[in-house]
Image 1 (cartoon, rainbow over the protein chains, first blue to last red):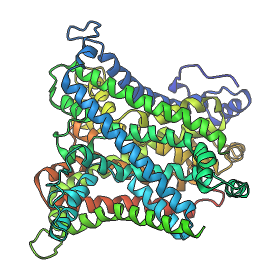
Image 2 (cartoon, rainbow over the protein chains, first blue to last red):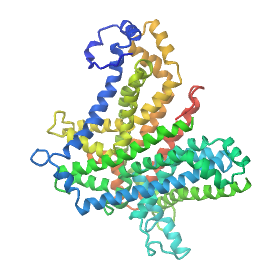
Image 3 (cartoon, rainbow over the protein chains, first blue to last red):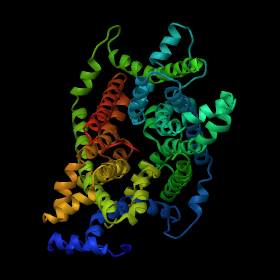
Image 4 (cartoon, rainbow over the protein chains, first blue to last red):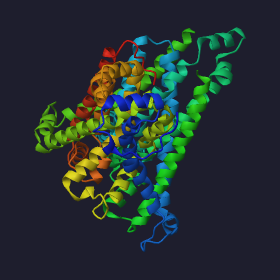
Length: 309
Length: 263
């Protein structure tokens, strides 16, 4: 099969009867059919995924005068921007680590904890829903729960005489946002890690037990080393997932918690940084961070899949 | 091994509490608009408001348009990659991952810069142009899920034999795609469609930055101005997400017997 490097000329097809061209495509391997079939996909990808992102990245290196400059990148060094990157990284890392840990324990419980089988499928279904229940409604749900008038806040105050807000908790803060993000991070972890835990064969546990291993030794020398690549990979995926998210944080905190996507949102809306090039540089920073996290995930996933086959 | 059961139950119950309490709290909050008594007033307020109806149907229409456009892009590509151009598979799969790597806010920022009024293709100039841009943005968001659903569907049928049989009977490629391949993967296509709908129906970032009157933007507005109605909206959204996911589960039962969801 030779690769198709020709450019597509859509005007060539409509006239020609299909049978002949399809037949020839079958035999020779480079008919127009496949080029035209794949063309809309590739044109769409170029126009609405690749070029806008690259154009934005390019904009980060163009000054107000239209000349090449590194000034926009240097200008990222203001306390406001550094601070927003730092908060974003902390929230994403905390919610990824917490989500991964809790998700792992939850997945272990439903798969290896010998719970009734109905519970497993219920948890998996619920995880499918909850991992997609993000954005604005999730913020509303947590405001109703842990906001100043939220159910849990009120119950703790009236029944247990414990005011969590007086104790220093605030939903519109680092920990509040982290706790909220866990609502979609944990289910995502459960969904991704469950197949890997299924891959831990019963024979391995039995073999380890026959050789006299304790449960701790089994996990230390067999279980965790096998799950490790998957754990690390999923961790970086969860990080990227939280880093790019904005709607939940925006609905929850308005602009009081200055994470990078919210700063960028304000910049796009009203040029709060008073420099369009700086907005592009901010975007470039976000692209780099999410890209690195995702590349780590993809590389580790390919390696991990080798073990679980 | 009896021990293991106890810890598993403890973990399960703690997890269930974390996930169920916010839902209960939201339901309770949405019902307490009147002091001292439970009422559905927050729901009637929301559902009767003209903005709710307008934005919800607007988002439904854009979502449906994104599904149709997405299918026109994805089905032929997945079909030809599977049948005749397997060497393109790595490229196509990498592209389907891009929307997961590029955050929506970056995507829309790029669109605003590229398709603004002074560009070659000034889509943001008119309302219709911006609607088209929003639809295409949603196609991009849904691309990974759509491609996966369609590709999984294609894996469960014998594409090669079906194509050859149709060819011998004199069908051209368009006929094959529309009348042979598509009906055979309709279950997979529908589950991709429901997932797409669940993702775009409450989408906020892109719609807001393109200034379109979408459901997500409306929800954010209500959240900033009202107390109890947002909780009602959250419950409604959750029910919609459940509905979409439930439909996918239900559809899986109608899938061909060989259809094992491997990914």
